[in-house]
Every structure is written in C-alpha cells, then in structure tokens.
Length: 205
Image (cartoon, rainbow, N blue to C red; front, side, top):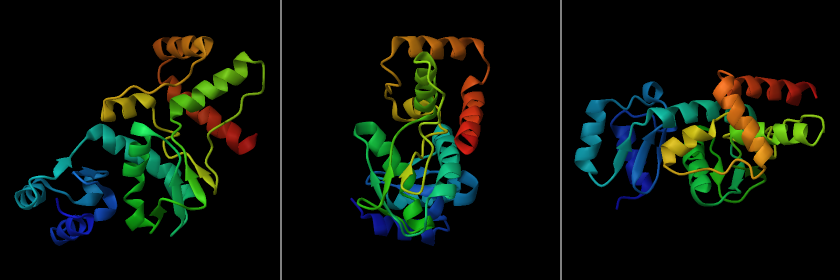
C-alpha cells in the first residue's frame, strides 16, 4: 500500500488541489469537486497508477464538508494542534473531515490545545429541547470556541449516517425524541430553522 505522502505527490502532479480532498490509507475522498479539480480524466490516470486506492465522489460527503468548512474557517487557527475526542465511526468522520486542514492551515491532528468533538446539528437541537423540557433557558450547547470545536454542529446526523452507513444516537430522552420526530414530520426544514435560532442565541445570549 502506498504511503500518504506518495499519494499526495501523485495527486499534485496530476493537477489536483489536495487542500480539497481527504486522504486515508485506502481512499481519496473529494471534499469539493470544483476546487479540487479532480476531473474524471485525472481520476482515471490516478486509478491506473493506484488501483488499490478508491476515489470517493460522494455528493453527501461534499455537502458535509461544505457545512463543516464554515465552522472550521471561523474557529481553526493556523498550525494549531487538534485532539479528536470521539470514538468509533464519529472519530473516523472527524479525522477525515479535518485531514485536508493539515494542508490548508497546517494543523496537526493528534495532541494539542484544541479539542474537536462530534456533536451534530441534531445533538445541538436535542440539547436545546432538553433545556425546554426541564423548564430552563434554551442555550446553544455546541457552539465552537478557540479551544473546543464542533466541526459537525451544522451537519444533520442523517447526512453522517448516509455517508458512513451507521446509526447515530441523538438522545436517550424519550420526550425529546418525540419532539424531534414531530418537528421532523410537521415543520419543513426545522433543523436549519433551529440552527439559525441557536446561532442567534449563541451570539446574543
């Protein structure tokens, strides 16, 4: 299996902008098709050289990266160390999404002063609904800071589930789960509406 640096060099030689792809041991995942310049012709050339490396052109993954980039662009500092505090599939998701930022911003993934946590948009909404159920003021629980970042805080959990083929637990509170199911069925785009409300609370609360 070729090493990561070899893969990155090969992609660059083909004209691919590696700041917009994620490279793992067995895959190259396109974060942004237009900015990466990873055309079908370049994919064919790459695959002929490295048939064991799968090129992933997932539309849902690109949407995830687009949402995450808005959070990361406003919170990540150049050359900062980022520690991923998650397990299993969510740890993998965060690592894949953060990987290009080792080239964009020169960050280091592993140990560092910044902690990346796996809460999704659904987790933020559930936390706010739990506040409401307890009769407490609603807060934006997963707002990123200079020390703690939530790259997936604007990403619906369903997108992550679709990409990874796994199920994410959002809440163990049955009342909150019922509220979320009701809103999902009866309020169009309720997640994005709640996201905007939570962001407003975070900025003005």
